[in-house]
Image 1 (cartoon, rainbow over the protein chains, first blue to last red):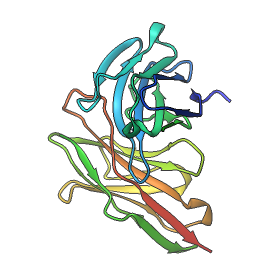
Image 2: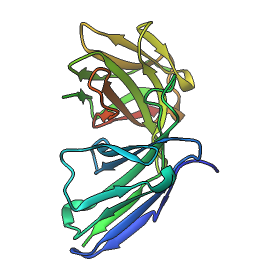
Image 3: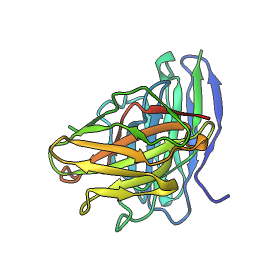
Image 4: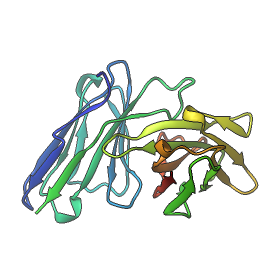
Amino acid sequence: DTGVSQDPRHKITKRGQNVTFRCDPISEHNRLYWYRQTLGQGPEFLTYFQNEAQLEKSRLLSDRFSAERPKGSFSTLEIQRTEQGDSAMYLCASGPFETGKIGELFFGEGSRLTVL
Amino acid sequence: AQSVAQPEDQVNVAEGNPLTVKCTYSVSGNPYLFWYVQYPNRGLQFLLKYITGDNLVKGSYGFEAEFNKSQTSFHLKKPSALVSDSALYFCAVRDSGAGSYQLTFGKGTKLSVIP
């Protein structure tokens, strides 16, 4: 399967710990998004990369959150000093170069974070 | 700011009947509109989109959606529902003039097709 893969699929941590999620996009895709989804809600935008450049970040994104995409391939999302309110599903999506494919994203199955 | 509203948390329809899942949007400029579907334990999948041109757009699995600028709506439709269509459906919008690549999603509508 050459879809978007995310790791780990589930993470349980204690409040105050740091966690890191990894996303491997579809190899030829230059666009990469991170979203957060809680129960009963739609995906909430966190950040956007075009190749290795982080072009957009949500204004709601706490400074405890940081994302990287070195070399424009895989991406990591780190949450420092986790809080119970960070418990959510973290979704990664990738997309090809936009011409003719505006908004067509391929989502991974997500990484579920539970903060105790 | 851009936003999407899906007024129905759940839609129930009998198999074989037509289905509609409603979506309204708000953007400053012209909208790019999308529908995604999420099956249990699966990632969101792209269904269809409106960028420009014909107001009626067709997508995967026999779904279509109609863009209505005056009503700021983009309802998802299918002439004959299948049990396998049961899933969570998300409408999304992006403002074409905002210089942003961000898609804003609605809360989702759970579609249940009853045999």
